[in-house]
Each structure stands twice: as C-alpha cells, then as structure tokens.
Image 1 (cartoon, rainbow, N blue to C red):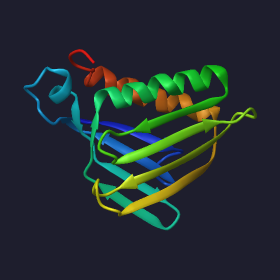
Image 2 (cartoon, one colour):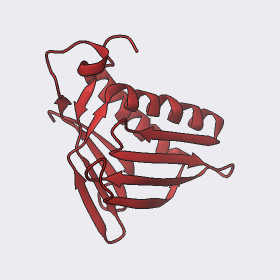
Image 3 (cartoon, rainbow, N blue to C red):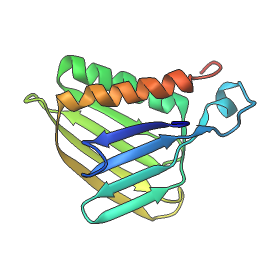
Length: 149
C-alpha cells in the first residue's frame, strides 16, 4: 500500500470515516507551515449518506488526535477531537464511564461554503481505540511533523 489509511468505525462495511493519507502536498518543503500539509481525502459513510472530500489535513492535527485518543484510552473517559485548520472535518470521540464511545462529527466538502454533513457513529467502545491509534502511529511514522511549531 503506497498510502496510509485511518478508519474511524468498525470497518468499511458499516458506518465509518476513512482518511487516506496519500503524501505531502509540498514534498520538497521541510518547514512547519508548508511541509506538514498532507493530501488526505476523506470518505464518510453513515446511514444512507456517502461523502468523498478532497481534503488536506496537517501532520500535527493527526498527531494531536492520536495523543488525545491515547489519554482517553488510558483514562477510560474524556474526549479526543480531530479538528482541521481548513474546516474539512471536525470529529470527536467521547468515552463514557461505561467504556462506550460516542463519535460525532461534521464534514465539509468545500471550506467556506455551507455544504456540510453532520453525523454520528454508534456501537463502538474503548476496545476500538487501539486500532485507530495504531493507524495514526503508522501515518506519523511515514509523515512525521516537520519543523517547529
């Protein structure tokens, strides 16, 4: 596989968000601002809705999401949010004291426009966090955060 995939959900056959990280948008750049943009289309499949968005996420956004998910998993409480600078996606994973997860988000097909999809993904629990963290680690290994924040 020449790209990295992050699946939020229980696989591609049920409700899920799939983020494909294809590479750096500016491959020759090593500075923080330009070097960390990742070509990362987002596919959302929830209920009867399917959305495909040609998004660009940043390496530190995915890293920060991973760090927050690790805290949620360790504490079995709290929330982790993936929030993109250009408002492609806002995704929150909230862990309840019972270990069940609430996942909700908003995806936009063109930041600055009003076309958005609000969604929820049900039926997950804290045991679904480690595979998500592993996928984010794999992205981080291939596309580490460059430069200084």
